[in-house]
Length: 105
Image 1 (cartoon, rainbow, N blue to C red):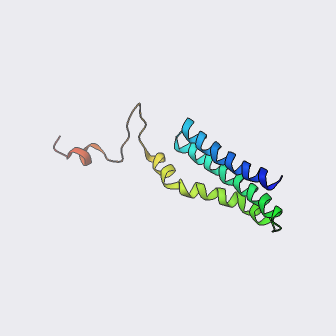
Image 2: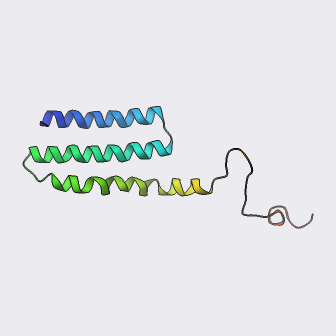
Image 3: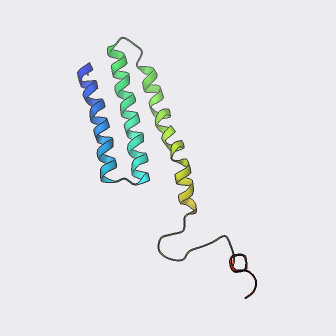
């Protein structure tokens, strides 16, 4: 892969990320697209480093750990979703009737 091909690949990766966000802007899709973008970009940076005479293995080793940071970024959002009430159906609460409305009934 030449330097020109690496540059084109990085541009394609950015375009793919933007397209993925345009088609499905949900949090799960964004998380998956961002992880894939980071892994591909790190791989391209490894190729670029090799072409420039540096050790590209460092980028290759760090590609997966860097993409796992995306999970940390979306942790709070995913944690909140665990406790959201369903859109349809019965709504559950941690409060019972007397706690919500008082014990006057």
